[in-house]
Image (cartoon, rainbow, N blue to C red; front, side, top):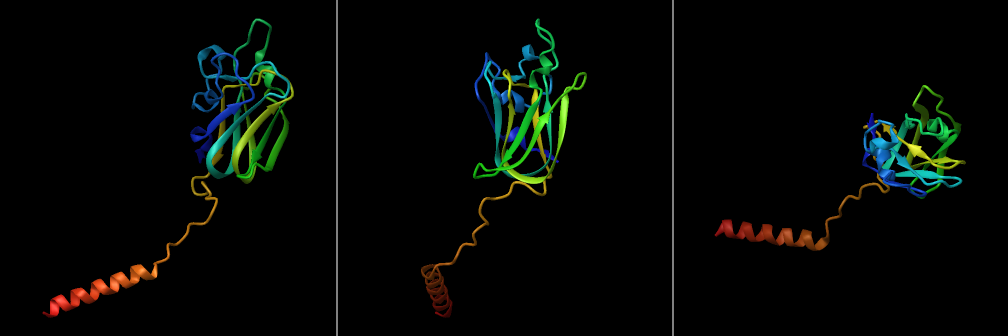
Length: 178
């Protein structure tokens, strides 16, 4: 399998500090917010994070990595709970979702099985605030993705090209005959 999120483009509803959306698809599952590899939205209701893949892929599973540290106020790791995951196709229509997921300590990862759904993007949503993600992985079988939006077109040979080729062939035959 291949993690198709790594080559995608990440966005989020807002950003706090240097905690960019792209940090959740940098390949680093290290979950310390001060460690430079955790994305974070600001304090807002219905915060979201989204990755748009570089094509459409048939997904088999998703891993969501939570932050692993705590802050002065207590267990920051519970901020993600509960969270929803939604997959979208190329027309931005929802094709699959998993609601009310939780990551319970000491675990720092949630693995969601996907029933081989073709998706172009994935969004993680929470009802609370401060959506913070250490890493998000979207797994696809290499043989199944990416799925082109249109079937490949077979080029048609134009009549002019055929005529030019025929004239060239006739000229070569005449030249060899002389």
